[in-house]
Length: 387
Image (cartoon, rainbow, N blue to C red; front, side, top):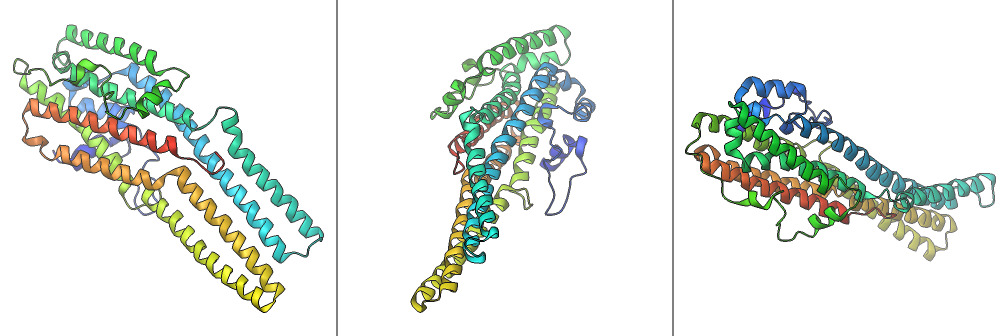
């Protein structure tokens, strides 16, 4: 099955993808690799009925849904509040600068503009600093994102590490109960380790330079166990389902981020960069006007030069701060690397026998962990000016 077919089969819940530059392809993202959507579960069950028994993990899905929703809210709080704080403060600076040129000093309009500009500056600073003072900083978002991604990794790592049990569970109720018990214990360990109010686990992942924490259980890191005594058709069915859900969905997700559309991080980074470059040109021109006004002794052009220079400087600071806080460029680079790494692993997948395919799946878990770690490092270092 081709990569496109793999992705299409697990996107049945929203297979009418949006088109056009202004599309929002992640608007209805359902984490199809975990079969959160009922339509996706029904599609997988229809395509691979025996494998579905081993893949279905309701307790994990419910926990993931709760964590993922909390992560979305935390992300919105951090990024939206940071963006608003920067823009409000920058608008206050620009208003104060332009008022000195366009309004008569001491007039009612001038005083009003000064009051509004001061309010905007104070409001922007307060909005930027207040979340940190009350502990609602970006670590709250990153911790919940870490929990969600580690839970996603747990689902696939447990199946790979217990592949023999999973294959037998496709047909034997006794083995299915054994797999369910393994999952129950794994979920308890996960909650003990990750569902805590502290950022200790986040710091351990950030500092994992040797990438030694990929596997939830260190005993899972070894070579796959022998599958020669297992029904080969069941092994192939389960691997095919895993391939579509893990390789296929991750490829689709990363590909969305490198495409050409208004919500792609590379495009948004380019907009911020181009905006800052245009304002830099404006700053240079305004500075030249100011210099000429000083030489010629023109107070009118001097005021215009000062106001325009200050306004451009405020705009440049705002756009650079937004890039530093949102990290669009680094996100684009990371997702480009992730897509290339997935494609490199998947290139020879169909030519591999069962043990080789299992090894490729385990290598993908290392790649997925590394991508998650890079995301956490990037956004942990990211700061808006006032955060």
